[in-house]
Length: 211
Ligand code: GTP
Ligand code: MG
Image 1 (tube, rainbow, N blue to C red):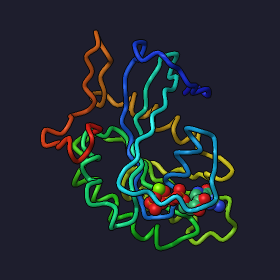
Image 2 (cartoon, protein in one colour; image 1 turned 45 degrees about the vertical axis):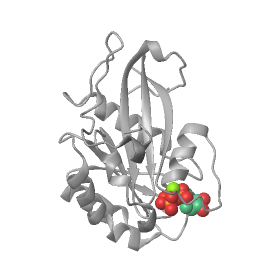
Image 3 (cartoon, rainbow, N blue to C red; image 1 turned 90 degrees about the vertical axis):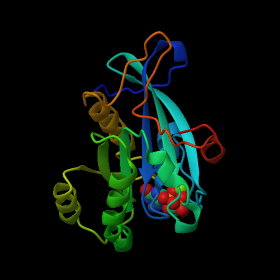
Image 4 (tube, rainbow, N blue to C red; image 1 turned 180 degrees about the horizontal axis):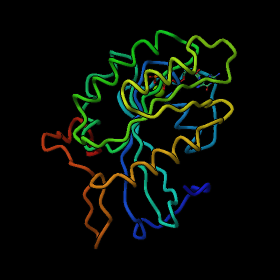
């Protein structure tokens, strides 16, 4: 995988678009990981997400421009009523927990189950992400995390949105895996693009035309 994923501007030159969703308990750092990736910034204050926020970034993969549409969902239950709608057509999922918070690790089964129920792509690329590795007070060992990932046959990666450790690599890996999964995506061709299988039951008044 190329090391340099860079911004591009020309939509017309796009090779494809990919849809990624970030899920996990409240406060684990989903928004912070995304902010680090898209803006190379970190905010130490709480940034509670309400519903879903969309961020886009165009990256270069094997000298081709690929637009990422990244959906940052709320972890907090009361802000999640509509978020499963955004799983539909998703090609990549980052299931995030906080390595210093055992509770967020213990809830991973619930998040993985929800993803299985609502995602419509059987070949969706899933990565388990242990965040906040910069903090010294780890409550979950690397071995425990790897074991859970093995049980679910998914990849495990670690990040710190604060120091940026692992964040770029995380997105490089998910993009690489998605593009190497046959049938998961289609090339943009003569202006026509199919991203996964868009939801037939999508209600524009719910999703504001985003899903
Ligand atoms: P919800 O939107 O409520 O689901 O939370 P979230 O998962 O988006 O978490 P958010 O990014 O808002 O981060 C929660 C808190 O953790 C904030 O105070 C962040 O600054 C902090 N935080 C996030 N990532 C890291 C990290 O890698 N290291 C440290 N030390 N703090 C982090
Ligand atoms: Mg958030």
